[in-house]
Length: 323
Ligand SMILES: NCc1[nH]cc(CCC(=O)O)c1CC(=O)O
Image 1 (spheres, rainbow, N blue to C red):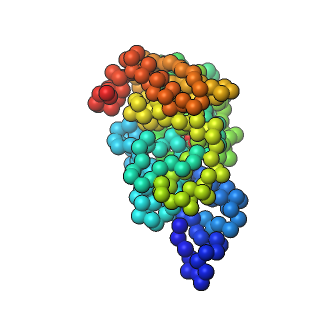
Image 2 (cartoon, protein in one colour; image 1 turned 45 degrees about the horizontal axis):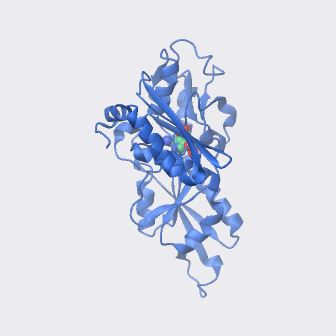
Image 3 (cartoon, rainbow, N blue to C red; image 1 turned 180 degrees about the horizontal axis):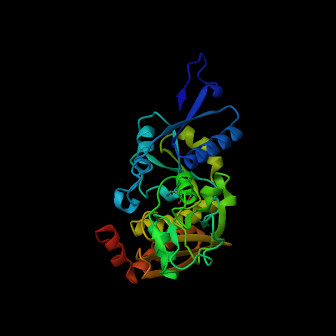
């Protein structure tokens, strides 16, 4: 952490913790949330936001699966932490790559918001109410795949940009409905725009959806101690299982992979799917097991999906085979 000029460097009031954040409304909300939590728990700490633009925010005209390179939304933030210009970065867990650069790691995972996808429309009240051939906006291959599999008649149209941009395009009449993560709308106090929460049976969420994680330098004991009270164990177990599956399949939120873990007492129930973007094939499976084995469960489920043929589907999407 940086020390502001002071005669007595040991006084905690002089410490400023700097949060690297993207500039979208949702990213800023999440960073403000972490700032507020930190300042509530540590009244002597001052926290400052350092907003920056990521590559993923700049390239808006191509589906993310095609932009190439994971971590489009986090690289700039990581560079600034490694350079010591900032201390922590707040991320949507859905956008965080599996591997961290040397010297950085995930410190805590905060309590999960609603993990479901949501249907937003100015005309129709539910997914079932969409007429034949309705135009649905999303650029997520995972959403496109699942919705097309039940409703092949729908016309899925490209839609990217931050939450407000996407809503503006819906409001401009470009789509009959759009699909967004419920969490983003809830955080931005736009939950009233949600017409229907899509249950996992209809649209299995992306791994980590709805959860916020905090990354920092792995050797920064002081920052790690400050962050510790923000951690939520139940969320971390669920997200660990989901991310383990994604890691094995080399995927994240930019590919047609869904995974969602719930806790049932001491057990983790993990559901996963891999599908062709057009929804003509969906492989889905599930596993259950002890909480302590969350990441083994994720790998186990990935292996089962691979045995069922997920590798061929993913090869088409990635352009290379997975081992
Ligand atoms: N990929 C963009 C992204 N990353 C996180 C969220 C939503 C909030 C969350 O999942 O925590 C969104 C927008 C969306 O999918 O609608």
